Amino acid sequence: MLRLTRRHHERGAAAVEFALVLPILLLLVMGIVECGRAYHIQTALSGAAREGVRVMALQDDVAEARATAKAASPQLALTDGQIGVTPTTCSGTNPGTATVTVTYPFEIMFGLFGSDFTLTGKGTMRCKG
Image (cartoon, rainbow, N blue to C red; front, top):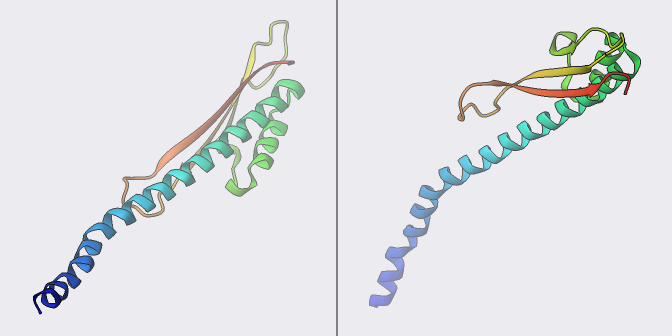
């Protein structure tokens, strides 16, 4: 009889332990999701900047470099204001390097991990390849 009583009293312990561990597990999963989203967007920005700077360095066309950067990451819906191209021309006797910088505001989905921030992708290439 004592054994049945002891099991009966321990039945609620698992529910209490689960209630204590569940919030920690949920925070961990939400953190993993946010980090995954940020990493995905960061790699898309880096790829867009790389494609944009390649066009700028080879074709010397700022508008085409921006269009290529936008086309390289259609899921982000980039604007011309988010894509910086320097210098604006790759000509002359010593052209140097071209740089394309793509910025994107990252909005945190759950709001538990701080405020929103800006992610940046940057590509640099020697002009005229």
